[in-house]
Image (cartoon, rainbow, N blue to C red; front, side, top):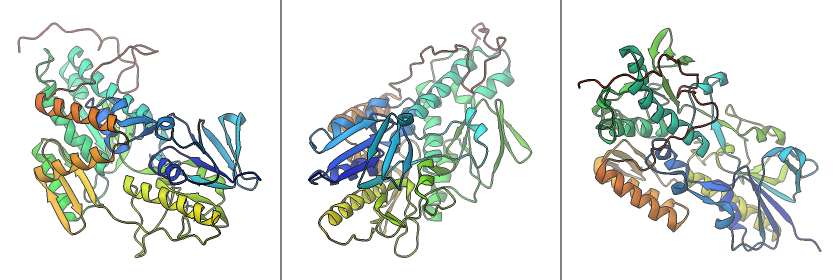
Length: 439
């Protein structure tokens, strides 16, 4: 008698947790992911700003699941799901895996609200490739400012605009002044890095809507004390190579970073299930797909709700809990037991706003300032996947915060040399080096 076949799509928090939850299952488990690594997304912005290297926050999925003899890991890009034939098709049809149970934890990408062309000039931050791209643009902006032949061009390179006032946007905005005002202070001769400007644009009335209003207000004050220009009710209407627009207002900048909005993986549309406005699957209480009890959705792709009707937030603890519940429900079905409802346990919210500044809400307790910042460091170290990751990040953080230096500031020559950080070919005139000033 053949063993049940369980397929998991996605090697993020939900997918890896689901796989681990099936380690004792009398089944053949297959995990598919388009990359070979598990990524700790909450620290991705530190890769994008040259604090950490990619290997500090990622681990090979095969290594994480190496002791599970019932689990096979395949690096493959899933193209579609044949839900009637119970088959996953990947790598343009070269890989086809049949299943008896399916867990979809494919995550989400950044959304541009119908303007996907903006991504060329305003990259989002969801993957290591995104982080590398942003890091290169960020570092390249300073290099181009050093070569700029006029003050207007130089000011454009030294103005960073971040779109989106959620945790990613706030954390990016909080760390950039520290880098510009300290890490690079003595590195350049033709401009003062302290002239760098950071603008944070949020389309809604306030930042960090997952936090209480007074904590969000504290975060805004902290950002403004760092010199960040925070603008709320500022809806972006256009993004161009040299500017971003709020309404008809033109804001000159050569570097726009996108941290606004999410859209679910397109795999959701193959399920024939109801989707919400973000493309997430409206799952049943046990995380299964309506009409398909053998299919479970977990993580950012699932539109799940708490018992009081509040949406489950798209955060790592929620994804871990969903992955665990999906695995347990499959084990229950295999044991001829009914599935159980998913119940989200809120472990709190944290956001850091630069050095020694953070906010935290843990149950009834609220923390701000340096205490919240240390708590943020501890929690993130604990949740990293491996001891090696924890040790590496701890060393890099210690080095960074004691010396104000960043350990991953290398730019390499890439195909199509001459492409500037804003995504367009740099003007040859702009690339002429200036003679050192007398500053």
